[in-house]
Image (cartoon, rainbow, N blue to C red):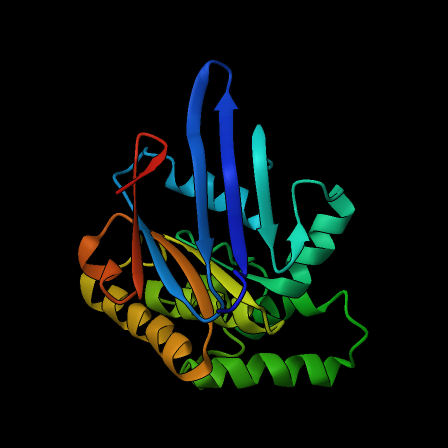
Length: 221
């Protein structure tokens, strides 16, 4: 059996007197697509932030790609996230003054790469997302579905070991959301991508290999 690519033990997160994440222990195997499902406000996004190293738990342990990310320094974490993790956010988080290809290439800027190599890698991913006609367009001229496809391309540009997707269809209509889910499912099935996706939509969660339910800050049976 493969070792988990992600494992947490007893992680908790409190904000003042409020315990938002309660004693969560879970794991994710390489190549798995897991959906984390629960109602708004149950702690899903906070848990995703803890598991990906965007936030630190109040207590507990998280091991990601073989690294204890709770013990890591901020500089170590920043480098680790950039070289191992892809993020997809509900609100896209594209830079409005950069074109589609420039947004995709942002994670590559710290790398020692020629400009033409950065652009070609970004454009290659955008072509895979069927956005070859949008390479030089600013985010303000793109539809919601196009913005999310740019965001997915950006998440893939550094060849991540795992993708964390936080409500990736939350700002999209149902038809566009289904198209985004098909892209994620294809990445998983055809490229073996490991994905942890947060969603409140049980129907969308059926695309995953495994379902984790969250309620009031805890993973429930």
